[in-house]
Image (cartoon, rainbow, N blue to C red; front, side):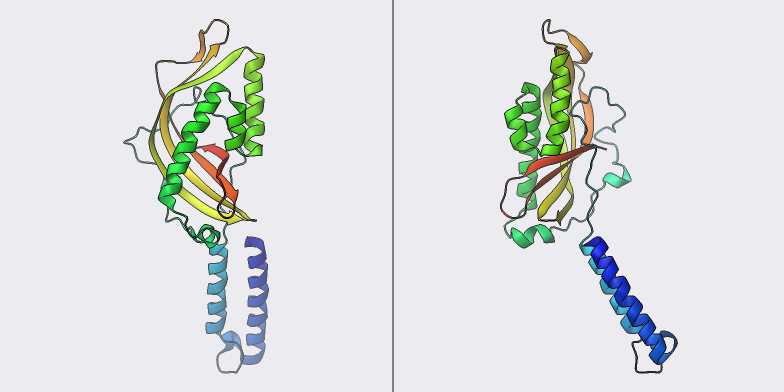
Amino acid sequence: MRGLAGGIMGGLLGSLLFSGLAQAGWGGFGGSGIGLFEILLVAGLGYFLLRKFRRPALATDYGSTRYQDTAGYASASAPLPEEAVPNNVDYGTIRMMDRSFDPDQFLKIAQDLFFKIQGAWNREDMTTLHSLCGSELMQTWDEELAKLRARGERNRMDNIALRESEITEAWTETGVDYITVRLHANLLDFTVDEKSGAVIQGSNSDPVEFEEFWTFSRPVGLNPWKLTAVQQA
């Protein structure tokens, strides 16, 4: 809609403007043509349409679920960076096909998926991961887990504690609903040698704190949500 609405409104404004100038002079004052007020009114409508059908950028860097190499995340008491502060989220397009949609209930679903997905990664449970995650994301994670297995290593995530979660964006595009959730958590993230059990990367005693944006999607309507993309703050 963004490109389509922009093209339609641009052409309409152009035709109104030149029609008004030709028939009524600059701004349309003093004649019977389209006037300045009408042009401003249509411009306002165009701005509303562009805002209404705006599509937030979906993360294409699906990232890793491993946090042992990350650093510099703010503590729980520190202020969030400006871009992470949530705005008023508009659920209008999602509720068009799902009138029962409840943001609070969805946030509980997202929290439950967060723990299920982390647990499945920890167990290398590919069946569960594929049932809860989108195909593009799983392509990245399949490759990462294959590399770990080839080296005889296993990535472990223990003592997961979710400290904060909130919805930051919601939109609908080409028949798919999307919702992004900010997750602030900490866990033990470490890699072990499968034969000896020795820790070869990370720490099994010092928790890692992290903040990520998880985007979930579903076909519009009453359909189950899946994790589509993960982006670190």
